[in-house]
Image (cartoon, rainbow, N blue to C red; front, side, top):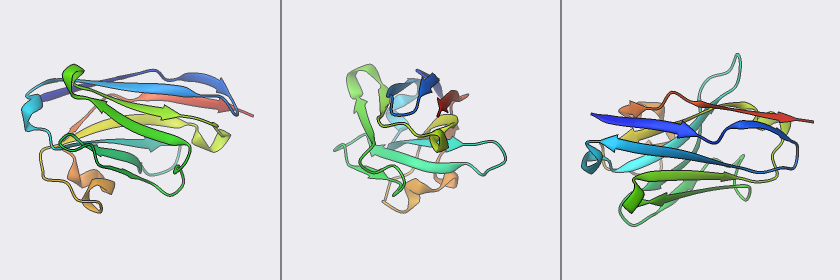
Amino acid sequence: QVQLVESGGGLVQGGGSLRLSCAASGRTFSRHAMGWFRQAPGKEREFVAAVWWSGGSTNYADSVKGRFTISSDNAKNTVYLQINSLKPEDTAVYYCAASNFPPDSVAVTRTTHYTYWGQGTQVTVSS
């Protein structure tokens, strides 16, 4: 089992920044990739970004490229999501997820690729 705990969300003005963290514990050796997703009220959960534990490759949704940066600290078993130039449409609950399966650039964008999920952290952006 892998436990994931997100933190770092909050209320921020448009144009501001946040850094979300996702701390992993448990059977961490079984992880291949970590992803961030978000879900706004009344909408489906959508892919934001992913990082490969081995090699550090990354993948981003087109809507966040240039503003969001995903990174990992293997020694701390923690994944980060730096969010800059926040917009009201970024308001959502942000979830991190861990996958047991070898990643590829398409698979990591799908919720079904991930086995473990955190409880989510709320990000609210005011205009």
